Amino acid sequence: MPTESAFVAVVERMRRDTADRNPASRAEHQRARAVLPGGTTRTILHHEPFPLTFVSGDAGTLTDADGHTYVDLVGDYTAGLLGHSDKRVHAAVAEALSNNTSVGGVHPNEIRFAELVCSRFGHQRVRFTNSGTEANLMAITLSRIVTGRSMIMVMYGGYHGGVFYYSHGNAPWNAPFPTIVAPYNDLDACEELINEYGPDLAAVIVEPMLGSGCVPADARFLSGLANAAQRAGAIFITDEVMTSRHGARGLADLLGVRPDIATFGKYFAGGFSIGAFAGRAELLDRFDARNPDAIPHAGTFNNNVATMSAGCVVLSEIFTSDAAITLTARGEELRARIDDVLHQHKLPLSITGFGSMNAVHALARRPTNGKDLLDRDPALQEALFLALLSRGVYTAPRGTLNLGLAVTEWDLDHYLIALDESLGELSEAM
Ligand code: PMP
Image (cartoon, rainbow, N blue to C red; front, side, top):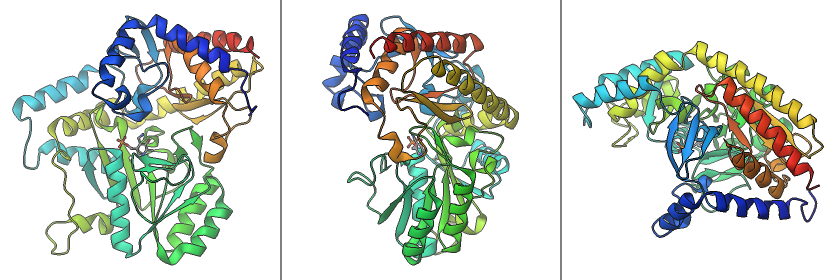
């Protein structure tokens, strides 16, 4: 990366233009900052000059407070898989809520949702939580208790929730477990670390694709890591909070890997808050409250009626295995089309991803691990984001594109034209 990016001046101009085009969002941002630190309640939503305020959505598009409509390729960071107006989820939730809004007891849809998760993803037991973060916290806690060990291994660049955030290695805001941060896609280095720390290692947790950056695991790496973890007596956890959308049973399955515990979340409940962790009965039954030494697992909203009812419709009617396979193929095709557009310009950009989750990087060579992602040119990354925004396409500022079910071929054509035009504009700055 050059010390001073050629794109710094362009970004400054684009920030000003974005601010000028969005007076209503700017006013909302100023109002928000008086009560929400920085004007948001989710760090990832922040970008310069200020995050837009969205007031409505329809299918694969979003409309902001100033009346601009965007093709939505953020897809709420994969939670918005269904798009913005799926009436089947609304109807199922409305019907369930009309019978009972908040039940301090077991609900039939909770049992049905659990059956659907277990049969689809090949697990014996599942427990629900409110978020992916909590699902990972519980999976790690269970691993520490069953192994009687304390340490966890995570990947540099990995993300498992607000308190498991390793984009720059370990950090003070993370859950205070003894933690080893290992290099993604480097099996030899991981095996060495596992050999060194094995007797203390409770769990190895890994995303089959690094979600922040869409860097897929090499199949040999993931299966080698699973074997090494299991040989050392550690629990192998795949975080499929994002990647369970790929193929019929998630990305680990496509790569031929079976975890001891898998975690889920995001799209699982059609946009309602959700997390889940699943695995073999011998592990998960440690939560069986009929046993005197059961591990407690609390959470007022773990089985809330809206989430449980939405989840049933999502997995049984909308995002069936067939729908998941089709979306994965559509995403693969999209990545190839984006790659073609990138090759028509001379900018230092590359694309990585799998299926419906892809990322365009301000980096000439494709990143293969978390450290590579740090070499992106932040000014070019931001300039691309703002250039697309000005052309009616909402992507994640870090470059990720999450293709959802409601995004049409017309929407994708619009995006590809906007990408081509944006790259033309940015090439002039070089
Ligand atoms: N794991 C992965 C791979 C994620 O992408 C996320 C969310 N971005 C989480 C865990 C945490 O999920 P949540 O935001 O629901 O806590």
